[in-house]
Length: 248
Length: 248
DNA sequence: AAATCGCTATGATGCACGTTAGTTTTGCGA
DNA sequence: TCGCAAAACTAACGTGCATCATAGCGATTT
Image (cartoon, rainbow over all chains, first blue to last red; front, side):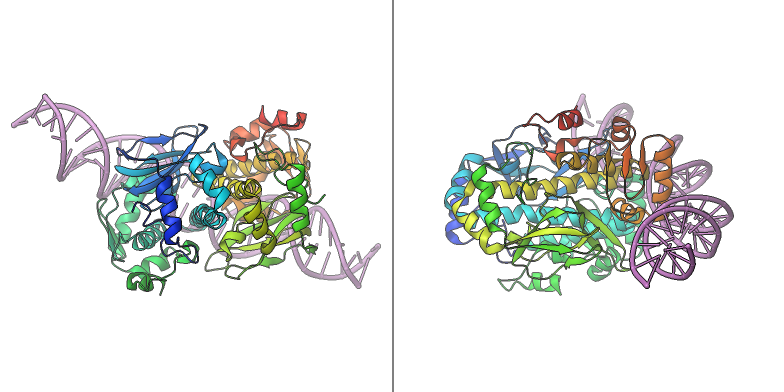
């Protein structure tokens, strides 16, 4: 099932069997994407949306000099651009960070869902609002935290999301991104990202090694980044102990 | 008509006469709010959403020490918390900046719209995605611009939105907020906000006087803040010259 | 084995912005 | 018209992060 991870363990909006089947049937094709490719550019008119199955992708805006500001990092189970369904044209680019696999869903299929299944429509809507809630947490990160706090917040968030996706055991996860990517998330230079990561290592909070992130002190890292997972709307309905631990 | 300004001049999603009437009928009551009151707190369960009719309001997150980071400023015609309809619980607070008037719409009424009017539902969805697009522009502002650029970007955005709402003539508008509010938008201290506003004044770009904002050089200010209004999805369908000028 | 490339690492220097501690101005209610 | 609080403004000083420059290191190519 390609849509297994979509909205899994999200408060009150998990898909039922029928809804999941409908969404599966809406998939038009599965595509693979190389690392570091732009798949959607700002301003194009879109007629499909994409669900991320494997790998990591991102969305970004760039400034006059071509410097990027990431506005979202997507993990497996996330829609990349469901917001393109109502918007049709995006204000930003979508690109892969690592090699990735995606499911392509035509807007025509979403029209049918929209017309016939108001409850599922509301859940799809919810999932785009989850993205907006993450945007707000990112605004807090950039507006109110220092560089160490920003990185700590980002790594705490990513850990929580990957636990929910079943891709982190709660302290360790693979995340094939570079220090430069982190700097584009956190609005700092890659030089400074390097110094911050060293500091997190020296304070025994977290070890970042590009291919592997190891959190030594989950609570300490969360405290340093003032991270509170409430905005992710994760809930342990299935009684998963890893999620219980996360929310404790 | 209370809903006059809602989605006015937004690309492809303006409400038709019937839709507007349905939305009007969904209004349960009109309320006034004093300046500087919190109307929704993070974590409450909500059963209504609110449309802003008059005045200015905002949404914010606060940090451990109680310092606020604004994540949105709402102007007349904006929903304050339509995202509470799918989400039910918000991750942030909603408060007034000035005295304000709002229309209250119960989620029950939105359920009926959701069930019976897929096209209107998609437009409501669109309006919440507009907020998300603004969040992304705000992320760019905080992540990639210096203090002067951030304030220039914010004032350019606000001008554009108020032109669309008919509350700015393109260069001058009333905005009853303080320098401290600006600092909470831009992630800087109020002391520095003051310095930045002086600089914008001295460079003959913009004069901010709390009760009145006067933009002396619209294009210069936009350039300084790398402001591009595309993310607001404004379009002049009605051939309004003020909007034409804005997008030129 | 040499060459190339992307990523990580680190030191020196400077500036934008924070912090602290005020003073002055504005506006509004009594 | 006074009185007072809130907002605007200013100055002195400290610091976190940017910038610039360079070097090491591992993987891939030839």
